Each structure stands twice: as C-alpha cells, then as structure tokens.
Image (cartoon, rainbow, N blue to C red; front, side, top):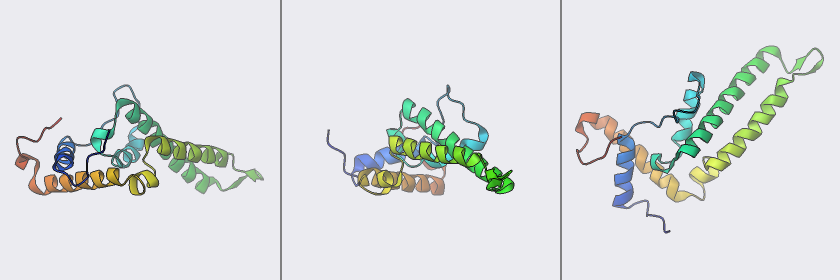
Length: 152
C-alpha cells in the first residue's frame, strides 16, 4: 500500500481531525499512575493520533511507567549516592535494566528519534501537520472549528 503524500489535502484533513479529538488516553484496561501521565502525554505526541491502536497504547503505557520509574530511581540514587555501604548502589542495576526496556519499547513503537525524525519522514511530516492544526485550533478556539471536522 502506498503512503499518502504528507503535503496532501487528505493528510491536512486527518491532522485537523486528530487535533479536534484531543489528547489520547490509555486503554481502560491499562493502569497508568498519575505520576507517569506526563511521560504518556509526551510519548503519544510522537506519532499521529490515527496511527495508534489499542495494543500500541498499552505498550506506550508500559513505556511511560518505565520512564517514570527511571526518574524516580535516579532521584533516589542522587539522594543515597552511587555507593551504599561500600558497594555500588543496587538501584543502578535496576536503572540500567529500565533503560534497556525503554530503548526496546521505543523501537517497538517507532517513537525513537530515527523513526520520528529520520527515515520515517512522512510520519514526521504528518506529525508536524497535526501540531499545526492543534495550534490553529487553540488560536481559533474549539467553538470555531468547522462543523465538518469530525470529533471524538
């Protein structure tokens, strides 16, 4: 199947529809603590809204939790120090394992830098179009959105 050109009217319409639907939420069956929500919000903005499916969103929640855990562990290590009782702080091993998990999940979801900025240029262009549509929506106000643009 051939990709739609990123400068097409079809992509612009899709971007406007995506923006009008608002932010993505995790699937109802997935637990995402409030402290992991900022990671979630940043993560799901790395692909156009219509390219996410339920399985990807569940995996994205796992990635957001892992990113939150890395930040939490790093704060704890910063407080406790790298060496505890004469040994390397055992939280470093957890931090390393979570770092590898983050890289793997990012690759799986195609939200790593190469996917969002490198070879997957069309995805990046579609994302830029969506962000521009969000900005236009914010500037115009939600009540000024054309009635033909589908909302959630």
